[in-house]
Amino acid sequence: MKVQEVIDRVIFDTCGTNKLEVTADKLMSGSADMEVKGIVTTFMATVDVIKQAVELGANMIITHEPTFYTGMDDIEWLERDPVYLAKKKLIEENGIAIWRFHDHMHMGHTDRIYDGLLNDIGWEPFLMKKHPPHTYTIEETTLGELASFFKKRLNMQVIQIIGDPAMKCSKVGILVGGGSLGLGREQMPMELMRDQDLDVMVCGEILEWTLCAYVNDAQMLGMNKAMLVLGHERSEESGMKHMAQWLSPLVSGIPVTFVEAGEPFTYL
Amino acid sequence: MKVQEVIDRVIFDTCGTNKLEVTADKLMSGSADMEVKGIVTTFMATVDVIKQAVELGANMIITHEPTFYTGMDDIEWLERDPVYLAKKKLIEENGIAIWRFHDHMHMGHTDRIYDGLLNDIGWEPFLMKKHPPHTYTIEETTLGELASFFKKRLNMQVIQIIGDPAMKCSKVGILVGGGSLGLGREQMPMELMRDQDLDVMVCGEILEWTLCAYVNDAQMLGMNKAMLVLGHERSEESGMKHMAQWLSPLVSGIPVTFVEAGEPFTYL
Image 1 (cartoon, rainbow over the protein chains, first blue to last red):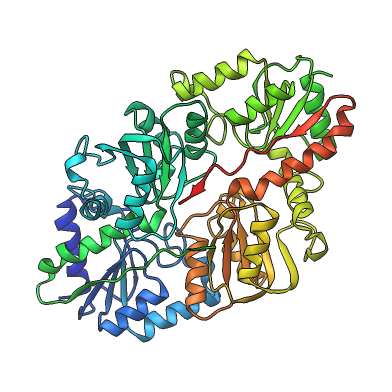
Image 2: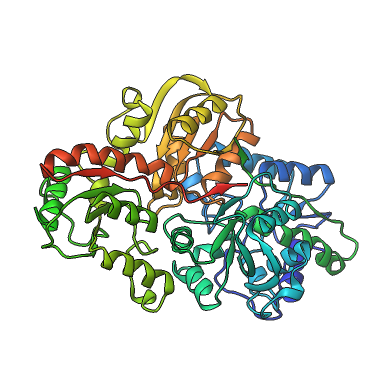
Protein backbone atom coordinates (compact mmCIF):
# COMPACT_ATOMS: atom_id res chain seq x y z
CA MET A 1 0.00 0.00 0.00
CA LYS A 2 1.29 3.45 -0.90
CA VAL A 3 1.47 6.52 1.35
CA GLN A 4 -1.39 8.23 -0.51
CA GLU A 5 -3.68 5.24 -0.01
CA VAL A 6 -2.97 5.19 3.73
CA ILE A 7 -3.80 8.91 3.87
CA ASP A 8 -6.99 8.45 1.84
CA ARG A 9 -8.17 5.57 4.00
CA VAL A 10 -7.46 7.44 7.25
CA ILE A 11 -9.34 10.55 6.10
CA PHE A 12 -12.28 8.58 4.68
CA ASP A 13 -12.59 6.48 7.83
CA THR A 14 -12.50 9.59 10.00
CA CYS A 15 -14.49 12.15 7.99
CA GLY A 16 -16.11 10.30 5.05
CA THR A 17 -16.01 12.56 2.01
CA ASN A 18 -15.74 15.69 4.16
CA LYS A 19 -12.17 16.47 3.07
CA LEU A 20 -10.52 19.84 3.66
CA GLU A 21 -8.99 21.84 0.80
CA VAL A 22 -6.95 24.13 3.04
CA THR A 23 -5.40 22.20 5.89
CA ALA A 24 -2.29 21.67 8.01
CA ASP A 25 -2.60 17.95 7.20
CA LYS A 26 0.28 17.87 4.74
CA LEU A 27 2.91 15.34 3.72
CA MET A 28 6.03 16.92 5.24
CA SER A 29 8.58 14.43 3.88
CA GLY A 30 8.71 11.47 1.54
CA SER A 31 6.32 11.09 -1.38
CA ALA A 32 2.74 9.98 -1.92
CA ASP A 33 3.77 7.00 -4.05
CA MET A 34 6.22 5.45 -1.55
CA GLU A 35 5.40 1.87 -0.60
CA VAL A 36 4.62 1.76 3.13
CA LYS A 37 6.48 -0.91 5.12
CA GLY A 38 5.42 0.14 8.60
CA ILE A 39 3.55 3.00 10.26
CA VAL A 40 4.21 4.85 13.50
CA THR A 41 1.54 7.08 15.08
CA THR A 42 2.63 9.78 17.53
CA PHE A 43 1.72 13.15 19.00
CA MET A 44 4.80 14.71 17.44
CA ALA A 45 7.50 13.40 15.07
CA THR A 46 10.37 14.46 17.30
CA VAL A 47 13.94 13.37 16.54
CA ASP A 48 13.63 10.53 19.08
CA VAL A 49 10.32 9.36 17.58
CA ILE A 50 11.92 9.28 14.12
CA LYS A 51 14.84 7.23 15.47
CA GLN A 52 12.43 4.78 17.08
CA ALA A 53 10.47 4.50 13.82
CA VAL A 54 13.71 3.62 12.03
CA GLU A 55 14.48 0.94 14.62
CA LEU A 56 10.98 -0.49 14.15
CA GLY A 57 11.48 -0.66 10.38
CA ALA A 58 8.62 1.79 9.81
CA ASN A 59 8.89 4.28 6.94
CA MET A 60 5.74 6.34 7.55
CA ILE A 61 5.04 8.50 10.61
CA ILE A 62 1.59 9.93 11.23
CA THR A 63 2.04 12.90 13.55
CA HIS A 64 -0.68 15.00 15.14
CA GLU A 65 1.41 18.12 15.62
CA PRO A 66 3.91 19.91 13.35
CA THR A 67 7.26 18.46 12.39
CA PHE A 68 8.89 21.87 11.91
CA TYR A 69 7.86 24.15 14.77
CA THR A 70 5.02 26.32 13.46
CA GLY A 71 1.29 25.72 13.16
CA MET A 72 1.34 25.40 9.38
CA ASP A 73 4.78 23.70 9.17
CA ASP A 74 6.22 26.49 7.00
CA ILE A 75 9.83 25.75 6.18
CA GLU A 76 10.93 28.89 4.34
CA TRP A 77 12.42 30.48 7.50
CA LEU A 78 14.31 27.27 8.26
CA GLU A 79 16.31 26.91 5.05
CA ARG A 80 19.66 27.40 6.80
CA ASP A 81 18.59 26.43 10.30
CA PRO A 82 20.93 23.81 11.84
CA VAL A 83 18.15 22.06 13.80
CA TYR A 84 15.97 21.80 10.70
CA LEU A 85 18.84 20.65 8.46
CA ALA A 86 19.96 17.93 10.89
CA LYS A 87 16.39 16.68 11.36
CA LYS A 88 15.76 16.76 7.59
CA LYS A 89 18.95 14.75 7.04
CA LEU A 90 17.83 12.13 9.56
CA ILE A 91 14.44 11.88 7.86
CA GLU A 92 15.79 11.71 4.32
CA GLU A 93 18.64 9.29 5.02
CA ASN A 94 16.11 6.90 6.46
CA GLY A 95 13.49 7.45 3.76
CA ILE A 96 10.68 8.38 6.15
CA ALA A 97 7.36 9.83 4.98
CA ILE A 98 5.85 12.11 7.64
CA TRP A 99 2.19 13.00 7.31
CA ARG A 100 0.38 15.32 9.66
CA PHE A 101 -3.08 14.23 10.75
CA HIS A 102 -4.51 17.06 12.77
CA ASP A 103 -7.43 18.98 11.30
CA HIS A 104 -9.26 15.95 9.94
CA MET A 105 -8.69 14.09 13.18
CA HIS A 106 -10.53 16.74 15.19
CA MET A 107 -13.40 17.11 12.68
CA GLY A 108 -14.27 13.44 12.27
CA HIS A 109 -17.60 11.71 12.94
CA THR A 110 -16.19 11.88 16.46
CA ASP A 111 -13.13 13.89 17.50
CA ARG A 112 -10.61 11.07 17.54
CA ILE A 113 -8.21 12.86 19.88
CA TYR A 114 -10.95 13.00 22.52
CA ASP A 115 -11.87 9.38 21.72
CA GLY A 116 -8.38 8.33 22.75
CA LEU A 117 -8.35 10.44 25.90
CA LEU A 118 -11.77 9.13 26.96
CA ASN A 119 -10.48 5.63 26.38
CA ASP A 120 -7.56 6.28 28.75
CA ILE A 121 -9.56 8.02 31.48
CA GLY A 122 -12.80 6.01 31.11
CA TRP A 123 -15.05 9.07 31.08
CA GLU A 124 -17.33 8.28 28.13
CA PRO A 125 -20.25 7.40 30.47
CA PHE A 126 -19.93 10.84 32.10
CA LEU A 127 -20.33 12.93 28.93
CA MET A 128 -22.97 15.65 29.41
CA LYS A 129 -23.48 15.50 25.63
CA LYS A 130 -21.67 13.64 22.89
CA HIS A 131 -20.76 16.56 20.59
CA PRO A 132 -18.61 18.39 21.31
CA PRO A 133 -17.12 16.15 24.03
CA HIS A 134 -16.17 19.04 26.31
CA THR A 135 -18.37 18.62 29.41
CA TYR A 136 -18.70 15.83 31.97
CA THR A 137 -20.61 15.09 35.14
CA ILE A 138 -18.45 12.81 37.26
CA GLU A 139 -19.01 11.33 40.70
CA GLU A 140 -18.23 14.04 43.25
CA THR A 141 -14.57 14.21 44.14
CA THR A 142 -12.04 16.84 45.24
CA LEU A 143 -9.74 18.86 43.03
CA GLY A 144 -6.74 17.17 44.65
CA GLU A 145 -8.14 13.70 43.92
CA LEU A 146 -8.96 14.73 40.36
CA ALA A 147 -5.38 15.96 39.91
CA SER A 148 -4.05 12.63 41.23
CA PHE A 149 -6.36 10.76 38.88
CA PHE A 150 -5.03 12.59 35.79
CA LYS A 151 -1.42 12.30 36.95
CA LYS A 152 -1.83 8.54 37.32
CA ARG A 153 -3.86 7.87 34.16
CA LEU A 154 -1.70 10.08 31.95
CA ASN A 155 1.58 9.27 33.68
CA MET A 156 2.45 12.84 34.65
CA GLN A 157 5.33 13.87 36.89
CA VAL A 158 3.82 17.18 37.98
CA ILE A 159 0.44 18.83 37.40
CA GLN A 160 -0.24 22.58 37.53
CA ILE A 161 -3.47 23.53 39.25
CA ILE A 162 -5.39 26.67 40.18
CA GLY A 163 -7.70 26.33 43.15
CA ASP A 164 -8.02 24.63 46.51
CA PRO A 165 -7.13 20.91 46.41
CA ALA A 166 -9.92 20.30 48.95
CA MET A 167 -12.58 21.86 46.67
CA LYS A 168 -15.45 19.52 45.82
CA CYS A 169 -16.21 19.10 42.13
CA SER A 170 -18.43 17.09 39.82
CA LYS A 171 -18.98 19.20 36.68
CA VAL A 172 -15.77 19.13 34.65
CA GLY A 173 -14.84 20.62 31.27
CA ILE A 174 -12.05 19.31 29.08
CA LEU A 175 -10.38 21.30 26.29
CA VAL A 176 -7.37 19.41 24.98
CA GLY A 177 -4.33 20.63 23.04
CA GLY A 178 -4.64 24.16 21.72
CA GLY A 179 -8.43 24.10 22.21
CA SER A 180 -8.04 25.62 25.67
CA LEU A 181 -6.63 28.76 24.00
CA GLY A 182 -10.13 29.30 22.60
CA LEU A 183 -9.67 28.42 18.90
CA GLY A 184 -9.51 32.05 17.82
CA ARG A 185 -11.77 33.40 20.58
CA GLU A 186 -9.96 34.07 23.87
CA GLN A 187 -13.28 34.12 25.72
CA MET A 188 -14.43 30.68 24.62
CA PRO A 189 -13.09 28.54 27.50
CA MET A 190 -14.49 31.02 30.04
CA GLU A 191 -17.88 31.16 28.31
CA LEU A 192 -17.99 27.35 28.31
CA MET A 193 -17.18 27.25 32.01
CA ARG A 194 -19.80 29.87 32.82
CA ASP A 195 -22.58 28.69 30.51
CA GLN A 196 -22.24 25.05 31.58
CA ASP A 197 -21.66 25.99 35.23
CA LEU A 198 -18.48 23.90 35.39
CA ASP A 199 -16.48 23.50 38.57
CA VAL A 200 -13.18 22.58 36.92
CA MET A 201 -11.62 23.14 33.50
CA VAL A 202 -9.02 20.59 32.41
CA CYS A 203 -6.72 22.17 29.83
CA GLY A 204 -4.03 21.58 27.29
CA GLU A 205 -2.23 24.83 26.45
CA ILE A 206 -2.83 27.90 28.61
CA LEU A 207 -2.32 31.67 28.66
CA GLU A 208 -2.04 33.35 32.02
CA TRP A 209 -4.12 36.39 31.14
CA THR A 210 -7.27 34.51 30.04
CA LEU A 211 -8.79 31.41 31.67
CA CYS A 212 -6.10 31.23 34.39
CA ALA A 213 -6.92 34.77 35.51
CA TYR A 214 -10.68 34.13 35.35
CA VAL A 215 -10.51 30.95 37.46
CA ASN A 216 -8.09 32.57 39.89
CA ASP A 217 -10.45 35.52 40.46
CA ALA A 218 -13.46 33.21 40.73
CA GLN A 219 -11.88 31.15 43.49
CA MET A 220 -10.69 34.31 45.27
CA LEU A 221 -14.34 35.43 45.22
CA GLY A 222 -15.30 32.19 46.96
CA MET A 223 -16.82 30.57 43.88
CA ASN A 224 -16.43 26.83 43.34
CA LYS A 225 -14.01 27.09 40.39
CA ALA A 226 -10.69 25.48 39.61
CA MET A 227 -8.40 24.44 36.78
CA LEU A 228 -6.02 21.59 35.94
CA VAL A 229 -3.30 21.99 33.33
CA LEU A 230 -2.33 18.81 31.50
CA GLY A 231 -0.36 20.50 28.75
CA HIS A 232 -0.69 19.95 25.02
CA GLU A 233 1.14 16.66 24.67
CA ARG A 234 -0.28 14.92 27.74
CA SER A 235 -3.84 15.90 26.79
CA GLU A 236 -3.59 14.71 23.17
CA GLU A 237 -1.11 11.83 23.03
CA SER A 238 -3.79 9.28 24.02
CA GLY A 239 -5.55 10.04 20.74
CA MET A 240 -2.51 8.92 18.76
CA LYS A 241 -2.16 5.80 20.90
CA HIS A 242 -5.79 4.99 20.20
CA MET A 243 -5.19 5.62 16.50
CA ALA A 244 -2.75 2.71 16.27
CA GLN A 245 -5.66 0.44 17.20
CA TRP A 246 -8.21 1.73 14.69
CA LEU A 247 -5.67 2.25 11.91
CA SER A 248 -4.39 -1.32 11.97
CA PRO A 249 -7.42 -2.97 10.29
CA LEU A 250 -7.52 -0.21 7.63
CA VAL A 251 -4.02 -1.04 6.36
CA SER A 252 -4.18 -4.82 6.69
CA GLY A 253 -0.79 -6.39 6.84
CA ILE A 254 1.21 -3.22 7.48
CA PRO A 255 2.52 -3.08 11.07
CA VAL A 256 1.22 -0.07 13.00
CA THR A 257 2.97 1.00 16.21
CA PHE A 258 2.26 3.88 18.56
CA VAL A 259 5.42 5.67 19.71
CA GLU A 260 5.01 8.10 22.58
CA ALA A 261 6.54 11.52 21.91
CA GLY A 262 6.42 12.21 25.64
CA GLU A 263 6.13 15.47 27.50
CA PRO A 264 9.09 17.71 26.53
CA PHE A 265 9.45 19.09 30.05
CA THR A 266 11.01 18.02 33.28
CA TYR A 267 10.25 19.82 36.54
CA LEU A 268 12.84 21.09 38.99
CA MET B 1 -3.25 64.72 42.07
CA LYS B 2 -5.92 63.28 39.80
CA VAL B 3 -5.89 59.88 38.07
CA GLN B 4 -5.30 61.48 34.65
CA GLU B 5 -2.28 63.37 35.91
CA VAL B 6 -0.75 60.19 37.32
CA ILE B 7 -1.31 58.49 33.94
CA ASP B 8 0.17 61.42 32.01
CA ARG B 9 3.25 61.57 34.24
CA VAL B 10 3.83 57.81 33.99
CA ILE B 11 3.56 57.80 30.20
CA PHE B 12 5.72 60.91 29.77
CA ASP B 13 8.40 59.59 32.10
CA THR B 14 8.45 56.26 30.25
CA CYS B 15 7.97 57.27 26.60
CA GLY B 16 8.25 61.06 26.42
CA THR B 17 5.71 62.29 23.88
CA ASN B 18 5.62 58.94 22.11
CA LYS B 19 2.03 58.20 23.15
CA LEU B 20 -0.06 55.47 21.52
CA GLU B 21 -3.48 56.21 20.03
CA VAL B 22 -4.62 52.60 19.92
CA THR B 23 -3.57 50.77 23.06
CA ALA B 24 -4.58 48.29 25.72
CA ASP B 25 -3.52 50.90 28.29
CA LYS B 26 -7.03 51.91 29.29
CA LEU B 27 -8.73 53.08 32.46
CA MET B 28 -10.82 50.02 33.34
CA SER B 29 -12.65 51.47 36.34
CA GLY B 30 -13.01 54.78 38.13
CA SER B 31 -12.66 58.11 36.36
CA ALA B 32 -9.84 60.32 35.13
CA ASP B 33 -10.76 63.15 37.51
CA MET B 34 -10.73 61.10 40.74
CA GLU B 35 -8.37 62.41 43.39
CA VAL B 36 -5.69 59.77 44.04
CA LYS B 37 -5.10 58.88 47.68
CA GLY B 38 -2.74 55.97 47.20
CA ILE B 39 -1.39 53.85 44.34
CA VAL B 40 -0.77 50.13 44.10
CA THR B 41 1.37 48.67 41.29
CA THR B 42 0.96 45.01 40.39
CA PHE B 43 1.30 42.46 37.61
CA MET B 44 -2.46 41.86 37.63
CA ALA B 45 -5.34 43.47 39.50
CA THR B 46 -6.70 40.19 40.86
CA VAL B 47 -9.46 40.11 43.46
CA ASP B 48 -6.86 39.62 46.21
CA VAL B 49 -4.75 42.53 44.94
CA ILE B 50 -7.83 44.77 44.95
CA LYS B 51 -8.62 43.73 48.53
CA GLN B 52 -5.05 44.52 49.60
CA ALA B 53 -5.25 47.90 47.88
CA VAL B 54 -8.39 48.68 49.88
CA GLU B 55 -6.65 47.68 53.12
CA LEU B 56 -3.75 49.97 52.21
CA GLY B 57 -6.13 52.88 51.62
CA ALA B 58 -5.10 53.09 47.96
CA ASN B 59 -7.72 54.01 45.38
CA MET B 60 -5.70 53.58 42.17
CA ILE B 61 -4.24 50.31 40.89
CA ILE B 62 -1.75 50.28 38.03
CA THR B 63 -1.84 46.81 36.53
CA HIS B 64 0.39 45.43 33.80
CA GLU B 65 -2.02 42.77 32.60
CA PRO B 66 -5.78 42.82 31.93
CA THR B 67 -8.37 43.15 34.67
CA PHE B 68 -11.05 41.26 32.73
CA TYR B 69 -9.49 38.20 31.11
CA THR B 70 -8.78 39.13 27.48
CA GLY B 71 -5.91 40.96 25.83
CA MET B 72 -7.91 44.10 25.12
CA ASP B 73 -10.05 43.94 28.28
CA ASP B 74 -13.30 43.77 26.29
CA ILE B 75 -16.23 43.54 28.65
CA GLU B 76 -19.17 43.06 26.27
CA TRP B 77 -19.13 39.26 26.66
CA LEU B 78 -19.06 39.60 30.45
CA GLU B 79 -22.22 41.65 30.97
CA ARG B 80 -23.99 38.85 32.88
CA ASP B 81 -20.91 36.93 34.00
CA PRO B 82 -20.96 36.23 37.76
CA VAL B 83 -17.17 36.50 38.14
CA TYR B 84 -17.10 39.84 36.34
CA LEU B 85 -20.12 41.20 38.21
CA ALA B 86 -18.71 40.26 41.63
CA LYS B 87 -15.30 41.74 40.80
CA LYS B 88 -16.90 44.90 39.40
CA LYS B 89 -18.95 45.26 42.59
CA LEU B 90 -15.81 44.94 44.73
CA ILE B 91 -14.06 47.59 42.61
CA GLU B 92 -16.99 50.02 42.55
CA GLU B 93 -17.95 49.69 46.22
CA ASN B 94 -14.39 50.62 47.12
CA GLY B 95 -14.06 53.39 44.53
CA ILE B 96 -10.93 52.00 42.90
CA ALA B 97 -9.53 53.33 39.62
CA ILE B 98 -7.72 50.60 37.68
CA TRP B 99 -5.40 51.66 34.88
CA ARG B 100 -3.53 49.26 32.66
CA PHE B 101 0.07 50.13 31.93
CA HIS B 102 1.31 47.59 29.44
CA ASP B 103 2.06 48.78 25.92
CA HIS B 104 3.76 52.01 26.96
CA MET B 105 5.74 50.18 29.62
CA HIS B 106 7.32 47.89 27.03
CA MET B 107 8.02 50.67 24.51
CA GLY B 108 9.70 53.15 26.84
CA HIS B 109 13.20 54.60 26.58
CA THR B 110 14.01 51.25 28.15
CA ASP B 111 11.55 48.35 28.49
CA ARG B 112 10.61 48.88 32.12
CA ILE B 113 9.45 45.30 32.63
CA TYR B 114 12.95 44.09 31.71
CA ASP B 115 14.45 46.85 33.88
CA GLY B 116 12.71 45.35 36.90
CA LEU B 117 13.68 41.79 36.07
CA LEU B 118 17.32 42.78 35.52
CA ASN B 119 17.23 44.54 38.85
CA ASP B 120 16.07 41.35 40.57
CA ILE B 121 18.48 38.99 38.80
CA GLY B 122 21.44 41.41 38.54
CA TRP B 123 22.09 40.67 34.88
CA GLU B 124 22.50 44.19 33.47
CA PRO B 125 26.31 43.77 33.20
CA PHE B 126 25.79 40.66 31.07
CA LEU B 127 23.64 42.26 28.35
CA MET B 128 24.98 41.44 24.88
CA LYS B 129 23.34 44.68 23.71
CA LYS B 130 21.08 47.16 25.47
CA HIS B 131 18.12 47.21 23.03
CA PRO B 132 16.26 44.98 22.96
CA PRO B 133 17.39 43.43 26.26
CA HIS B 134 16.91 39.85 25.07
CA THR B 135 20.42 38.36 25.03
CA TYR B 136 23.04 37.83 27.74
CA THR B 137 26.49 36.33 28.13
CA ILE B 138 26.80 35.05 31.67
CA GLU B 139 29.60 33.25 33.46
CA GLU B 140 29.49 29.62 32.40
CA THR B 141 27.11 27.56 34.50
CA THR B 142 24.87 24.51 34.09
CA LEU B 143 21.22 24.45 33.15
CA GLY B 144 20.39 22.98 36.56
CA GLU B 145 22.26 25.78 38.35
CA LEU B 146 20.58 28.37 36.16
CA ALA B 147 17.17 26.88 37.01
CA SER B 148 18.02 27.04 40.73
CA PHE B 149 19.15 30.64 40.34
CA PHE B 150 15.83 31.72 38.79
CA LYS B 151 13.79 29.70 41.30
CA LYS B 152 15.58 31.43 44.15
CA ARG B 153 15.66 34.98 42.75
CA LEU B 154 12.03 34.89 41.58
CA ASN B 155 10.76 32.78 44.49
CA MET B 156 9.39 29.94 42.38
CA GLN B 157 8.06 26.65 43.75
CA VAL B 158 8.68 24.65 40.56
CA ILE B 159 10.38 25.44 37.25
CA GLN B 160 9.69 23.69 33.94
CA ILE B 161 12.77 22.95 31.87
CA ILE B 162 13.66 21.31 28.58
CA GLY B 163 17.18 19.91 28.36
CA ASP B 164 19.83 18.20 30.43
CA PRO B 165 20.37 19.85 33.84
CA ALA B 166 24.10 19.09 33.47
CA MET B 167 24.34 21.04 30.19
CA LYS B 168 26.88 23.89 30.24
CA CYS B 169 25.58 27.28 29.19
CA SER B 170 26.70 30.89 28.96
CA LYS B 171 24.67 32.51 26.16
CA VAL B 172 21.15 33.05 27.42
CA GLY B 173 18.08 34.66 25.86
CA ILE B 174 15.19 36.10 27.84
CA LEU B 175 11.71 36.73 26.44
CA VAL B 176 9.35 37.70 29.24
CA GLY B 177 5.55 37.58 29.42
CA GLY B 178 3.84 36.98 26.10
CA GLY B 179 7.04 37.91 24.21
CA SER B 180 8.10 34.27 24.13
CA LEU B 181 5.04 33.54 21.96
CA GLY B 182 6.74 35.60 19.26
CA LEU B 183 4.67 38.82 19.22
CA GLY B 184 2.70 37.79 16.14
CA ARG B 185 5.48 35.72 14.57
CA GLU B 186 5.67 32.13 15.89
CA GLN B 187 9.21 31.77 14.52
CA MET B 188 10.68 34.78 16.34
CA PRO B 189 11.96 33.10 19.53
CA MET B 190 13.58 30.32 17.47
CA GLU B 191 15.15 32.79 15.05
CA LEU B 192 16.55 34.72 18.01
CA MET B 193 17.99 31.56 19.51
CA ARG B 194 19.53 30.52 16.19
CA ASP B 195 20.79 33.90 15.01
CA GLN B 196 22.38 34.76 18.37
CA ASP B 197 23.60 31.19 18.90
CA LEU B 198 21.98 31.02 22.35
CA ASP B 199 22.33 28.00 24.61
CA VAL B 200 19.23 28.63 26.70
CA MET B 201 15.97 30.52 26.21
CA VAL B 202 14.27 31.77 29.37
CA CYS B 203 10.55 32.23 28.69
CA GLY B 204 7.32 33.63 29.96
CA GLU B 205 4.37 32.04 28.13
CA ILE B 206 4.96 29.00 25.95
CA LEU B 207 3.30 26.90 23.24
CA GLU B 208 4.36 23.29 22.96
CA TRP B 209 4.41 23.20 19.16
CA THR B 210 6.86 26.09 18.64
CA LEU B 211 9.98 26.87 20.70
CA CYS B 212 9.47 23.87 23.04
CA ALA B 213 9.50 21.49 20.07
CA TYR B 214 12.50 23.24 18.49
CA VAL B 215 14.62 23.09 21.65
CA ASN B 216 13.54 19.52 22.34
CA ASP B 217 14.63 18.40 18.86
CA ALA B 218 17.87 20.37 19.10
CA GLN B 219 18.89 18.68 22.35
CA MET B 220 17.87 15.26 20.96
CA LEU B 221 20.23 16.00 18.06
CA GLY B 222 23.04 16.57 20.58
CA MET B 223 23.08 20.35 20.21
CA ASN B 224 23.75 22.52 23.24
CA LYS B 225 20.21 23.90 23.58
CA ALA B 226 17.80 24.18 26.47
CA MET B 227 14.86 26.16 27.81
CA LEU B 228 13.56 27.43 31.14
CA VAL B 229 9.91 28.37 31.63
CA LEU B 230 9.27 31.09 34.20
CA GLY B 231 5.68 31.74 33.19
CA HIS B 232 4.08 35.10 32.47
CA GLU B 233 3.63 36.39 35.99
CA ARG B 234 6.99 35.32 37.41
CA SER B 235 8.86 36.81 34.44
CA GLU B 236 7.08 40.20 34.56
CA GLU B 237 6.12 40.88 38.17
CA SER B 238 9.57 42.31 38.98
CA GLY B 239 8.85 45.13 36.53
CA MET B 240 5.86 46.21 38.57
CA LYS B 241 7.82 45.96 41.82
CA HIS B 242 10.49 48.18 40.28
CA MET B 243 7.78 50.59 39.13
CA ALA B 244 6.79 51.40 42.73
CA GLN B 245 10.32 52.81 43.17
CA TRP B 246 10.45 55.01 40.09
CA LEU B 247 6.81 56.08 40.33
CA SER B 248 7.08 57.38 43.88
CA PRO B 249 9.05 60.60 43.10
CA LEU B 250 6.72 61.34 40.14
CA VAL B 251 3.64 61.57 42.38
CA SER B 252 5.25 63.26 45.36
CA GLY B 253 3.26 62.75 48.52
CA ILE B 254 1.01 59.97 47.27
CA PRO B 255 1.93 56.60 48.83
CA VAL B 256 2.93 54.00 46.23
CA THR B 257 2.99 50.33 47.19
CA PHE B 258 3.83 47.27 45.14
CA VAL B 259 1.44 44.37 45.74
CA GLU B 260 2.48 41.02 44.35
CA ALA B 261 -0.24 39.31 42.30
CA GLY B 262 1.65 36.04 42.67
CA GLU B 263 1.78 33.03 40.42
CA PRO B 264 -1.77 31.67 40.01
CA PHE B 265 -0.60 28.05 40.03
CA THR B 266 0.32 25.49 42.59
CA TYR B 267 2.08 22.27 41.60
CA LEU B 268 1.02 18.79 42.68
